[in-house]
Image: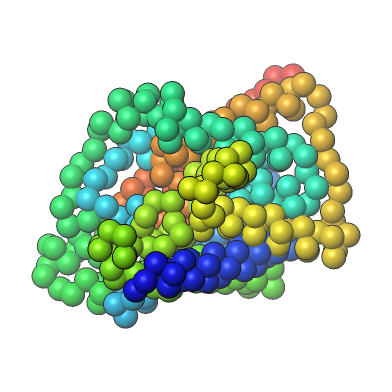
Length: 371
């Protein structure tokens, strides 16, 4: 493949990722899909409806990804989630930070973009703070702290940390077969729980769960199948075009904030190219804005007071540092990562939810104390 062909392929990947991200933003705006909101609904009012949306999206993404593994189209080991180095402490600490921060900031990374598309200026500030904190944790002062502390604690898993690879190494069975069987079994259990109650069968739950789960799986296909080059003309090695990690990617909304700011600030630098993460960030905002404007839900919103400002600044910083440390957010680890069935994604997801519950309990304690 010639360099011109690789560039043309990268353009196809970027347009496909942008279109799918627009769909993600539109669905999230229309259905109020939000992980932080789902946890808050449970803690504050005992409502599990939005959690059923999220679990349905997980089930669809898991089946979609692993069906492609079984077909030989994708390999979980080509993602950042299923590598041989299980940095469990980073996933735990980073996840707790991210979960706590998303409550302070009124939503996770994806919800921040959806709210920006709806006219929320508070979320625009969170986006900038989160992007700066994420960049510092990728390459700056907090990156040094991360690399010298939590990242030094890990378990080596030569076969890869995704469950199909682990079981294939232990049993000798075909990895693709195990991937599909595990995915179908997990998805069946998830679907049984989602549809057990009437609210799990509502139109909004179905639209959000099936729609967003399909978007996650589709972006995996775009990056890992469409964007795969068996021999890059520059390196003569296999490559995944238009990705920051140089691996196949699906949607995630922490590090891409940093790459988006970097691209905007150094726009005149020819080495700064658009990537899947950058265009997906823009796509979610665009999709949300389209639905918000069409439905009359668009409205400008700013900070109420200094305390509100401080909470959102702190939340954005915690999400930026925590999300990079944990290798993802509620979408990056909770959907994209979890779809690979990687152990680190399960740990990060548990920690994110725990951090959110802790923050909500803390907020409720403060309210009760003030009363």
